[in-house]
Length: 193
View (cartoon, one colour):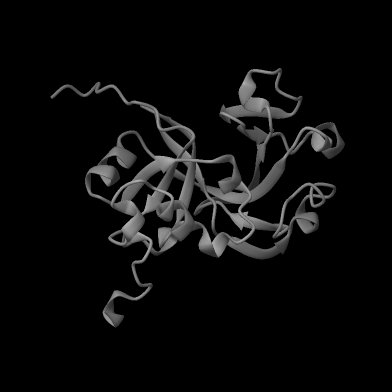
């Protein structure tokens, strides 16, 4: 087996934690992959709201952040850094990307939080602010996929700004046209079965 296996990019896809995933950081996590190649992977956990208001750490961005207007914990890495993920409706259609926004996948992109918020206000359909991110080294995510730690499914722009993040794990699984829809009914505590 050669060391240079071709990595088909999962950028823009969702990683949905399987009930088998033991890492408490990712219990029932739904991760949006922002970058995935042979160098490794980077994503943000979409369903971990914190009690911190966006405006408390990023003045001016709070008005643009959807409900709940709090910072989300994007993952265990670099918790002191903020990352903005924004959906630009029509951004998928090949229109020029607005200043301060870089397409990741379709209408989903990264927001430059150094830019003035009003620059993006009219273009953004939704915005979510994340503290920290989830990262994997080269080949690490592929190993976890082989081990059955994650389901890989298509993302939808609404996943980024789901107003009830505590339901996202089930909602994403439920919309799958496969046996994954059944996993959505998995009890929070399997010992209750």
